[in-house]
Image (tube, rainbow, N blue to C red; front, side, top):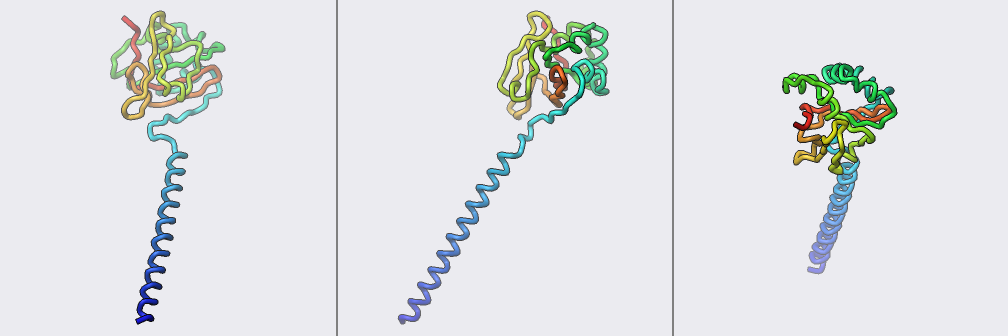
Length: 179
């Protein structure tokens, strides 16, 4: 009888050790998963790129922004965007311009540009309101329910493109001048 009690105690002891070891492994796995998750960028985070030139140069060099770049050149704002800055430009992609069927002119260009600030993604995520180059016009950035960034309710789909004198963000719509 004493032998069977000793065996039972031994089995209980071994089972307890196995449970404790399993629990420790499970806790360790949870901790390392949290650390890995924290280090990974948010799926909605934008991918920054660097351009070795001014905002005006980057616009002119980007084939997907050629409609906006042509409007910048035609309006005479290219010279300003080639200056010291800093600037933040919310440029519509060619597809966005085509979809909006907008004839971009100086008012559209100035409505989409902020002078005096090279806003980072972190600053945009802080929900900012900035004066555009167009008098009495604001560019308001918010974080949407999808954790995406929006400028005047238009989704920012690319950027920032970090230039020597500011930032460019690509939109899937066109910021229109205030009526």
